[in-house]
Figure (tube, helix red, strand yellow):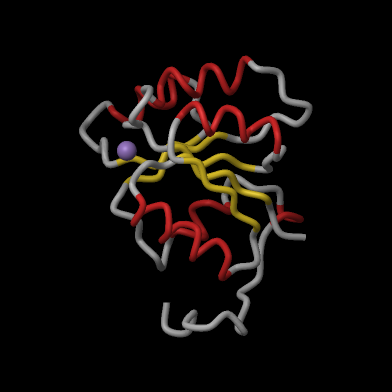
Length: 138
Ligand code: MN
């Protein structure tokens, strides 16, 4: 059974790339472009995993992850930072803020699914959907 993944990312190209790769492996994707939208959707869609940018138009991901974690989900989904903040110390700062993990940008299409699925229960891992048009060669 694939996972339901909430992407909170304001950069449309990055958001589309992540969604494309996740869907190619059978996962369901819900996309938010602001922290506020992401917060709202995290309640309405009960995601299995949240991928969260740090530099968002309306908030800082370090603050957002705290709010996501404090808001008392029925299930407590992992929240993984996906960020171009890749200086020394940025990873530690993200983990200290409450993120369960950290995936650096730029997204590597060959590694991305493996990086994401490290945070999913084995029963939620996806399978390559060969019938998706254009997925060959990724
Ligand atoms: Mn951003």
